Amino acid sequence: MCNILNWVIFLNIIDRGFKEFVLEIKSKNEKEIYYNIRRKFEVIPEETKRSLEKFFDNFDYWGKLDVSNDVYEEIENKEICLYNHIDDFIWLYDNLADYRSKKTLYSILNNWYNYDFALSASTIEYMYDDYFDLDLVKCDSNEVIVDLGAYIGDTVLSYIKNYGKESYKKIYCYEVTSSSFDILRENLKDYKNIDFRFKGVSDSVGLMRLVDNKESTSANTVVSDDEGDVVVTTLDEDIKEKVTLIKADIEGSEVAAIKGARRHIINDHPKLLISVYHSNDDLWKIPKMIYEMDSSYKFYLRYKSTCVYPTEITLIAI
Image (cartoon, rainbow, N blue to C red; front, side):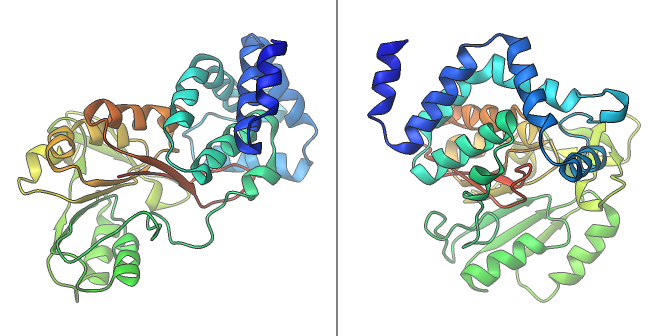
């Protein structure tokens, strides 16, 4: 252990912080990790605790948090992920292509474990819009874009604002909420070559049922249901032409959508802009899936949300 610690001292501050974090996690058993998180949670301000409780109640991706009823599922889920997958996070850290991404990963995990809001605040994206880091994502007039979770057209409008009206050949917009789909079509009616598809995207063709989110229609999800009324397809089945960019923010269905786009990823090597925050495991699982399909991809992480609990985390794979 002493030799490892001596080695850590000679690393840069980001590497050193992450390696020390890894040593901390690896030195503890599951219960110790859980109770460390609980102790750190107990000392954050009461107002912040209430805010987190409300957030996890409104968006049920990470588990419930209800202090008055002694429910700490969200903390339990973080502990399980850290304990079982610290080696997967090491793999991800080693495969991130810039130190901005490495610091972002370290800040997210340190937020989970230590409620370190200062570090997560230091990595919030302010310069660029969601998905479109202009230092990384280069686009031109030949782009064939797939927008999974197109919502009301906000991502497409952001793309056009950043790259221009002539910066694509075609855009496929997938959306499953009818009210959002109507607004999507209205918002983008004046733009050329937009293909609107009222479908979900997964790893198989079939039917699913829409589950409304009480806080926002942007967070509606789909669940397997043979009697559902949401048509679900795969990108490999639904789009036959070459695609150059896939954006996915589909409320926890990203893993299945990537599986269903395997042929496009292997053959077309599209730029991938994928939300990796709808479960704790998505943060490491999705880049590993992409790497196993095509090991030539380079990975970057950006996030743009509150520093109290980082969400809106985007994996940029190029």
